[in-house]
Structure formats: structure tokens, C-alpha cells
Length: 140
Image (cartoon, rainbow, N blue to C red; front, side):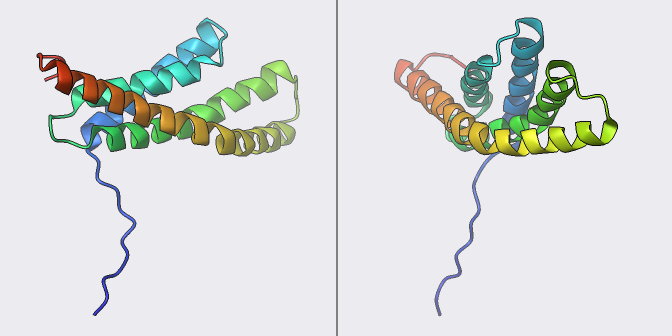
């Protein structure tokens, strides 16, 4: 009997939620306080580092970081898109605001997910590799 393909990914919820929280907090601060949308890349990398530090020695920290960044981006993108539609484009009608927000979010998610999720994964992999090579009490 053949084995069924199961597309599952191994991750832990606690580091994932930490990564999502860091992604949302730093993304909001970068976008609305410093007006730098490019900080989303830095926040994804930092979320990966935080997920790595919140994981155990043998835990899949990079997977947790990637899922956390994905959750953070899915929450953060509609908020940023709505503010762009209302304040930058000046759309006044509620129906137009909703349509433009959904369209901008969908298009932006296609691009942003392909960039930010691997950055979170790389951030966790680099910090996990570094803390295992250093051997110190970094994050343990």
C-alpha cells in the first residue's frame, strides 16, 4: 500500500505567535511612526530571530518563524492597504474604499509573502546557526 502525501509542516505555536507579534509591532512602527514601508523586510528578519530565540535547541525554529511572519503579514497587510487607500489616494466612498483595499491587499500579498516569509526563515536559520556555533546562553 502506498503512503499518502501529507503536506504538513512542523512548527511550535509559542515561537510562531512571538514572531507574528514582532512582525506586526515593528511593521506598524516602521510604517506609521517612521513612514518607512521598507522596514517590513527588517521586521520579518527580526521576527525570525525572535522565533529562533524563543524556540528550544532542537525545535524547528525556522518553520515557526516562516509561519509567524506569514500570520503577521496576513494581519498587517489589510491595515496598511486601508490606510494607503484612505489617506494617500483620498477615496471617500465606503464601497470604493472596501474594493480598493481588498484589491490592493490581494495584489500586495502576492508580492510581499514571496519576499518576507523567506526573510523570516533566513533570520531564524542564521540566528539558530549562530547560537549553536557560539554555544553560549544566547536565547536558551
